[in-house]
Length: 322
Ligand code: CP
Ligand code: NVA
Image (cartoon, rainbow, N blue to C red; front, top):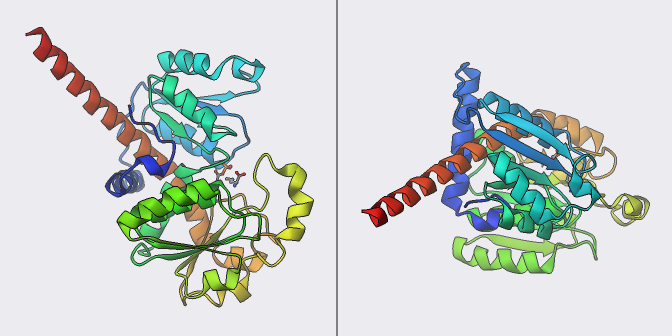
């Protein structure tokens, strides 16, 4: 059973294949060609944190593919009242064809997936946000910037940073991460991505200096300084992250036509200046829209893998019964 919990479990060829399917679906949509590739399938979407993009893109995407999506807030289902993750997983996966979860600890989605009989998709955990990276990379492909990427990530060492690390490690590009001291990335995830990078030739550079990270970068990106679940630290973080805003001064050090990406929601005057955000708003909102297309690519790909697996199992059991 293939789940989509982090990019770590996917080869670079698989990541590119998912994006290619997503781009094909996007193109078809422009030409008003709707293929109902997930007809009669149901996607359960469990949200323990807020969302605009993830919810709307998965729900619309599933509908456009001929299926149906169920929005399940953990406040409204028994999971929020203490029903076990492993029981919830067995029940929901017996009734639905795919499950998307947005939650806190990454270990929770891993436990859920290990008890699920259908593919589970990570819609964000405290450690990773891999579906966002599918959309981000798709955007770079569309803007023909995917060759020789030198990407600078400025800000908090969080779920987005970890996912950029995995993407860089898998696809073999250079990623420079500048965070304040004590807000660096998870050392275990860094170690894992550096191991993968040895094979792909990726470079992952860690610094506390945003200027060093941005120098001649072809892509600059950031994310909120206060992720969901860290609201109590917001005031303190704003003080500590002073000097880490992506603004025109910082962008002037990047390569001439450097792209700026933001997963959104964006907080102007904090991680990005109003001017830089608006200057790059076209690509940023294209990146947001690509959540829809990339995730459709992902769901179609996961369904294809399941069908391949079922055909293999059928073949094996026919051979055994002969
Ligand atoms: N980028 C992103 O995941 O947005 P939402 O939190 O609105 O889903
Ligand atoms: N790092 C942010 C990403 C939001 C899409 C968070 O976890 O809140």
